[in-house]
Each structure stands twice: as structure tokens, then as C-alpha cells.
Amino acid sequence: MTAFSRCIACGLCDRGEASRIAASGGAYRGVMPLMLAASRSMPDFRAAAYSFSFVPLEVLREKEGVCPTRVPMVAISQFVRDKAAEVGGPLPLPPRVSSLRPLPDPDTASVGSAG
Ligand code: SF4
Image (cartoon, rainbow, N blue to C red; front, side, top):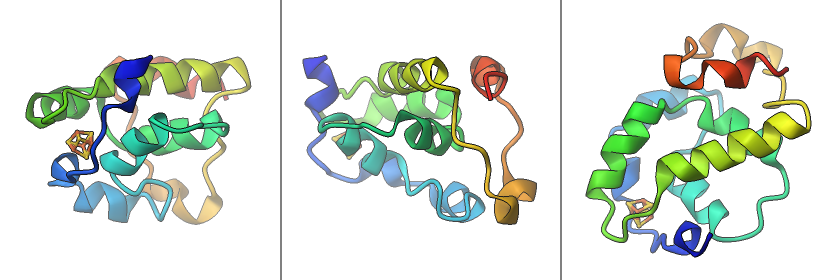
């Protein structure tokens, strides 16, 4: 769990995220905010899991390779998704952005089935 607290807020992992951020309608604000949240308390796992649903695990794997402190992004994402699944899964999608939700990723397909 200490590895979850390595983020130094350099911003490298937010490169290339503009289109996913825009498509989320405000629910996803980039990888860095999620990694920073993992280093603090993250009581709302459902909201965090919903935000994570906008960035595929393969993208997080690639970003782990450029992270200077080797934040385990995939493990953090999985931890959040697992915790959210225990309490009902990611938050329901607000109607105003329902048409923008990305298609399920094969690596994360089980996340959406819980809600
Ligand atoms: S690349 Fe790593 S250290 Fe930099 S903001 Fe992202 S998670 Fe944090």
C-alpha cells in the first residue's frame, strides 16, 4: 500500500488525456488526480471507480512506464474497482453524459456488471 503514495504530481501521466477528460463530462479529470487521491484517503470508491472507467488499463500500463516514481497505476485502479464493487460498483452515469461513456474495455468488463 505504500506504493500507492508515490505520486509526486509531475503531471506526465496526464499527457494525452484531453479527449478522455472532455468525453467524461467532468467525471474524469485525468490520471494524476486519481493517483494523488490514492495517496490520501479515498472514501468514495464508487465515484473514483467511475472516473477510472474512462481510462483503459492498457493506457495505465503504458503510463506506469513513464512515471518517474513508478506509481502502480493498474494496481491502484484495480484496488479502487474492487472496493467499489463491494458497495455496488461505479456510480451510475449521469444522464447528460450517458451517450459519451466509453465502451467497456475487455480488461475491465466486470466493473460495469456490478451496477
Ligand atoms: S507520472 Fe507518476 S508521479 Fe507523475 S503525476 Fe503521474 S502518477 Fe504522479
